[in-house]
Length: 288
Image (cartoon, rainbow, N blue to C red):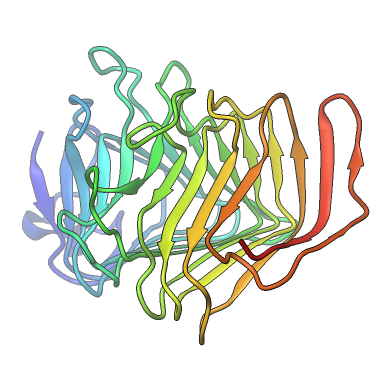
């Protein structure tokens, strides 16, 4: 087991990318100080307790998981104003299967508040979707802020992405599937044509007036949150920023959508279809 740092931009599999010429693997921890492409199936991490840092992406740097590649992380990934980019067909896999007590590992936005440069870019296609999921026998993964009460001014741009088995049945910090506590000026949260299966809540709070929130053409299937809401968006009124929530499909047991504090400008409901456990919101806009 070793702590390995990038020494130049390049492919993960290349010895020239890493200090000492050692390619990181199972049991290692990694600091990304250059733009690195994960070009081959890779498992990394120590299978430690919850909060154990495995991958750190430094400010202004990008870790890009190449098309069709699976990155398995046995611990946390932390974005320190850095970017995690997922290419079409790639997979990010949370794996606590070998850890004591199977803790929930995370993708974290920074180690301090207000790291507006932290980004997840996950742009799949209709024919080549991206996946975030847990490994077999692992506890669920979590994507979100670094600690309770922190203001993680980050961005997520996800299209044609499948989120599977994230979060827990509890509702609150450390348990939601995706937790974003604040969006700063120019930051954005975009979920478009995404699918959430067996996940806890998607929670976005503190969306500032010049930040962007888009939640369109998504499916939420078999949500596990004990809270009655599957998605929770709390924002201020938009000025130069945008708020778009439309054409989403929820397969409901007890869940729903909650929008607070001027998420959108007007009330407009149409074509709401329902049966015992299915409701399709073709368009929903409201101002509270």
